[in-house]
Length: 487
Image 1 (spheres, rainbow, N blue to C red):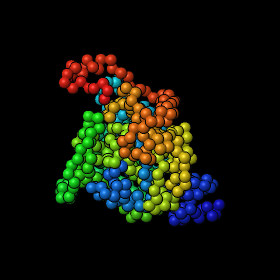
Image 2: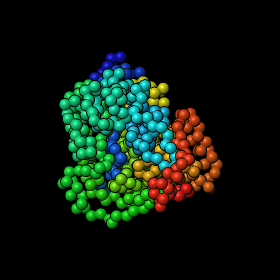
Image 3: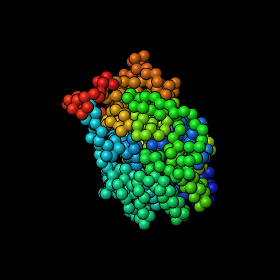
Image 4: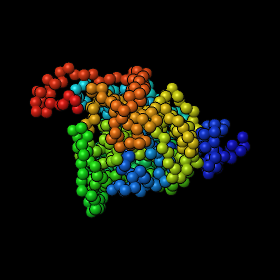
């Protein structure tokens, strides 16, 4: 016991020995010791595509030196996925460790778009019955912090009700610590700076106690706004001519060249750098886990088309890789090797059990039932991953129609609910999803379709229902634009 006490007392020993042994080898270290010595900073970008950071795309037009530096100090996942191609469901999966379908939040809260089908019902809040990761960490002695975009309910369903400090004030889905004031939610330069300001102040004030800081930035969500000097910097950079493609009837940006978006991203990157610097300055970086990810893929097919996800297809609102493959970085001192890369598919449900393991806390398997503890991967070991599933029974604002998908090994099946159209891709051979192998691989299609159907049945997934009056309504709206029934 004396030796364990020495490990607990020496910060560098905890990072080099205590966390890996406690989390990965199940050595019987006192759980309270791990809690005292392990902080968590979770940084969530909004609408940031996989190809938008230099660590994933060295040739990008954008500049993200601080995010790239974080990747060099931890593990970068090349096949990290969001649980949904739009925001609220992914945020619910992070908080609960469940596929969004189990929470009833399957579209962004407030979404009401319709088409040939009536979209499935969508909850307007995360149920209070869910035991969030914030609640679990709070009950284990963590001091929790929140500033930014919640988008999982307001009023009785705000962050205050889900494990974060009661000292919060909010407007719509945006919440900040009391006394800080609330910037205009559409003025992202101010929201980015304020979230960073509040986070740095929190770290400084709580450096002697274990803390969980959840920082869901608004950037790089539209409207695209940034400091004029940064925009001018990118307007002066040489860029190739704009190029456009199509996804069904939607235009798709094919070149990263949007100066305003680049400036907005640089401001986000600067904010990330300030938070990381505060950890270093306070001497807690070696006992702080840092996560960086995004709630869905980059916005490329609508609403200004500010970024490109090439070579990945589609973007936000679509179940193609461009809509669900996102930046995924975890730095866990004493566990992750600097500059390590993992190619195993992972998904946002996995954060909950993984962070508990890294903190030396017991798993909550009935709560984060769809998540996988990734600690072995973080330590450089191999893991066989169970299939990943998506269920999006809605019409996205970005043109994506209702669909479901399953990723099992290298295979990915997308089932479009309108017309039961199927697309099959080998993601290892064809990450751009250009060669539909559904006709050539009927056996694989059948197996994956059965897996997807069984999963929907087990999770009690709600499906969109055909609108028998859709064509009549379409004629009344605009006779010249009746949708092609085969599209």
